[in-house]
Figure (cartoon, rainbow, N blue to C red):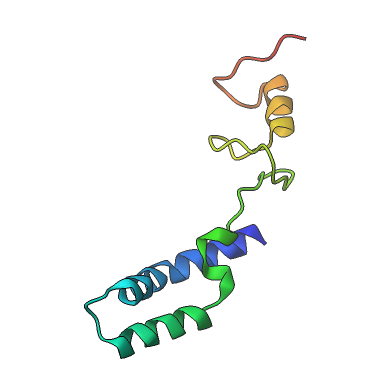
Length: 93
């Protein structure tokens, strides 16, 4: 589901940013600002950046995901202990 949300966001990112800039521009006409806000409200909710959640690629866990490896701390530690990630030292047992 997260990959689907990311794909929809990338598809509509430019369109949403243009509509937001028109909506917030005080020099544009009232009717164009109204139309921009209408199109923003009718666009799919999945297309906003807020809905994107950083998830672990292996387990799908939401919390404590490393940005560098995109894995959760449990998967990260397990893969280091199995020497699957180069450049990381194993924690002492």
